[in-house]
Length: 577
Image (cartoon, rainbow, N blue to C red):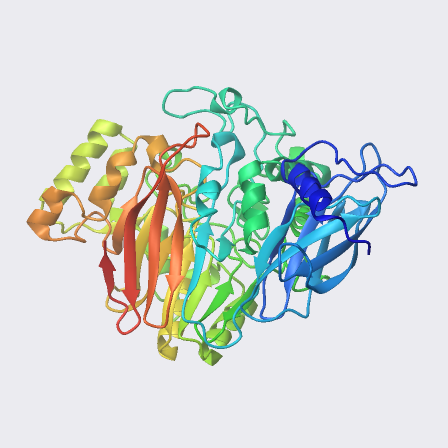
């Protein structure tokens, strides 16, 4: 492969990184130059390899594009350590992925693609996992990226965070169309159509259903400069949630899927999975089954990361309430009686045991891996909040009666004897599958391993204790990230609820002590801001910094750390700063 001059290489890379509609170089044969409009990405790193991704297409042509690729230890590519060829095939929507092998553990690398006319992609940086001991690993955790709701400033803020890896827990895209009535297109508090005013109207205009629809939506997201830059900066380890398919999905359907107008759920699920594998830098565990994406990563002897699929692979339909939407006035009161029945054994069998977040196969895979692990920490990356987020019954009932009644109920509970029962509200989370959660936590507890769970989906930030159903045993801790842009509690007028949830309000803390808020197992929450969690793992501790941006409605913003939580390996006790 002919090497470009340093000047021509840099010029080409800069043009590509900016997302230009055309690249400058053209081959002598007269062949139209392919465009690398969507940048480059890497993902699923191992100690000796990493997935490299790009998209290459010639304007107004549907043909395949032959590419070469290089991985080097230096930005000038004078020391190429791995190289080869790959095709951006039209059958895969002109995306291209390759598993670059022969790399050294715990090293940073530079990579790029080249098409036959001599045009180069942007240069990306990636890194491999440590193979043995590692003093420290730092990664950023993201979830819930709703294009129409605002700018991806959260991604931009992570560029210089020191993170070596990005962990995405799902809702990388959303399936909704551009109708102002669809979620995220309109500000719920003042009824302004924010998607239009921000220039963030999604394409296609309909809810995405076909393979072409899903591909078009991924392409729109990947034109975003902040998202493209973060992909080029570090390797990603990603898992899907519901919106890569349809809202509140499960194995056999979804709340936002209508068979009468949108056809077969199995067909929609298949094309959504195909588009995900095409556009994401994921190492496909089983090419014959694109719906199987749970997988494990060992970061030397420091920690094992178990990425679960709690959405599509084995989840049964949400049975308690309307697909589990929290605080949904349409379903008040929640089906608490059936929930209690599910937790009451009949002839030694819990009726709720039939409700599953993951299949028995995935359950056994996870618990078997944890039991056999020799790493210091066991970290689970999953979509949904695992801790018990149970509210006082009076508070849940009062929400449907309006803000004033709700506020009164909160105050009455916090200043009263606190003797009433608490109930779960989000049955789409692990709260809707309590027996499988209990079985999972107790199985992990029996291994004696140190458990940390990473969660997304809720659009708010949480640090929680993971306790047994009866509250007597703490088995692990949970860091749950806020969203990149998707609105959370604040969109329902509940932005100020955090200090009463976690008990950090001075009036609560002074009277009862910290941690004595509405929800017993929540130690920290933020119900207003968008952000991510910056995790630092050492043998002695796991530290999570909850990073927030102050604005997603403009390109300018400021980032700050809302809370730093450090969990000691010796006893899983957390300290806060």
